[in-house]
Image (tube, rainbow, N blue to C red):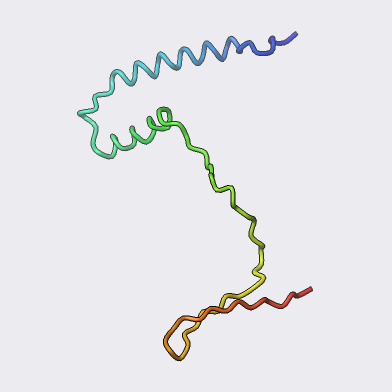
Length: 96
């Protein structure tokens, strides 16, 4: 007979509690004024992971369309004799 579903493991809960007490004690004893700048930055890097939530990529662009892996046409941009820009789109030959 195993653990009841949804009930936390007793050993895991005890270990987490002891680690929390240990971490709290160490943090309380850190004298930040004695740390150099590199140590302060490292402390921030580690601590911020537990304070700031990680962001997930999200997009509000509902007009997004999947692009083909290989191009189907070529855009050609040139200047004409009057120094004006000209734009031409030419399809690529399909290779089977």
